[in-house]
Length: 181
Image (cartoon, rainbow, N blue to C red; front, side, top):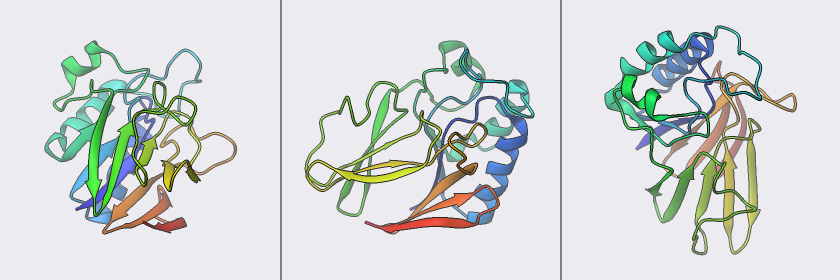
């Protein structure tokens, strides 16, 4: 299965639109969203193109192809307008022989680990900074960064997971890091 993985849209219709264009260009089967979809949160500035109602319509147009977990800025009121589930704190995804523990990152992260086995992958957003680092017993921590509010000078982007290959890409689909599982 070919997955586009993204996080932290924070209500930006401009960058949500660019993400959905990349999703289409990548010809992915599913879009996996790691939370913080509609609201910018009290610690963030308003992202360019802030328009949660339009983001709702953009995402609902492809709801049957979206998987999502809840971010710290997502609430029950958001679930009332979105046509796909967003309130799970985590999910498990299996790719080849690897198990991905998928979450937003505010509850589970490298300093507060979920139950992982050797070789499992912790996948989360929340920090707005792309990351790929090993820890523990052959474990990996992966983060796509942020679609609309990147931090530390990192690009707005997403990850593409396809057959054991992961690529970090800008919203223009330019690859800037790759990893084989």
